[in-house]
Length: 638
Image 1 (cartoon, rainbow, N blue to C red):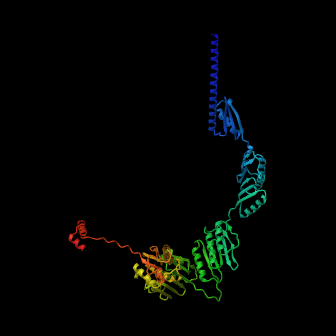
Image 2: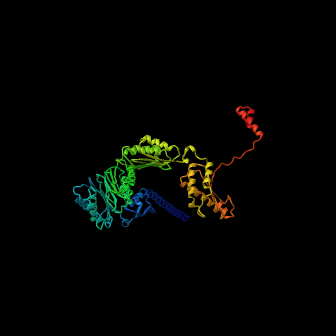
């Protein structure tokens, strides 16, 4: 009995011990899991993704490789916020800094009136105090501002050479920015003038030697040049500049381009400077050089706004007048041109001064030759623009103050006479005035004669040769489209519009026919014309249709080239569909190969049958709506 009681007691104690160990083991596992989870959460919150956690009982192990000491300490602090720091075991390694790429060492030396500033990063091995002493010796009594940072990495190759070179040139430039890197130095600065810039560049390049790569960007204020001069010559010795000045590099390039077009081959110097009389200096210079080229040679000189042009001896008077007139008209207003044509040899015939005004059939008017003053030229230009339209007039007349005082009156009278013509020309000389051209006014000759007699006086010598043309006569009216169609057939007659064999290229023999048709169609105006192409039946049907279409289009293109408005024309290629003769014979096939001009007529309106009942119903409706008498409505239907 006693033995049984003792056994039961021992068994109870053993069971309790096993149970306690089980509970302790489960509790320890739970604590480890919870601790590891909480520490990982805290590490993730601080973005410490390189760190990991391991546990052993109550101990928490931090493992991983930290990029630096600060990161390691941050990980320990994060774990300490979750568990007792006594439980945290540090097993973190630090990344080997010797494997990190060194930074890019560079220094900016800035020098201005306030002193010298140093900004950048230099190796720890560089003697910073010695650097400051060297700079102080190079620029004594100059305040120094040190904003340098250091890094403990090996000194890169070429660093010391670049640093020594930069300090040695610091004294050369009062205002500069010197950028230093291993083996290279970049210098930006300003100097007093262009001559100093060239000298400094040469000196700095010499000092650099072969050990330092040097980049220079030195600027100098442009000098004020007075007078602003350019002189270009083209003669038997070739094209060249005696003087060249430009306000900018772009302006200089424009001048050089014009000179190259005029025959300049050698490289030249062109000073850049301030003082140009206008921002259009290069435009004016280019125009002057082009004028010399057009005359075949000469000299042009710009001195501020004064321009002197000298033509070569032997230059034709007409060419001289035209070129000088165009130059006077195109030069900016600030420039004043003085042009000189050397006296011809004594045995050369004397040139006659004249003014010419022409009007083309298209309505374009050109005024050229000579006129006696700038005001007279402006007046003639304004008068012509009022008479012919501002966009149709081109004035290239040059000023010649040696002409008679009444010259401008005769010019204006001639322009007014020209306005009476559809096209023609007026020539004014010292002794005569001639008017020639075409008109649609049968009385134009007498009207122009009366006009000139009234403007210039009865004693004035003038000649009128005006031709009346019916097609220009507005009183006769424009032909109807039907008349135009018939007249085209009449023009073609027994002739034919032909093409080169197997192609859509017009034969040269058809040029006269096309000219006559174009002249008529210009008179007919905008009519609904169909230009149709036809072929014979030889070859494939699709090829014939395409060829006929292309030939009809070629005719339209030829008319368009002759200034015929073709917007209302229709082009159709019928191919072999509409023969007018048998394709069994050569003569028939030749007849079928043709171009036809026909009016595009509206489609006929289909008639509807009208019954007596519908007429009576219509009459009844009219009576109701208009209040008219039914009998009257019936009579109207009759």
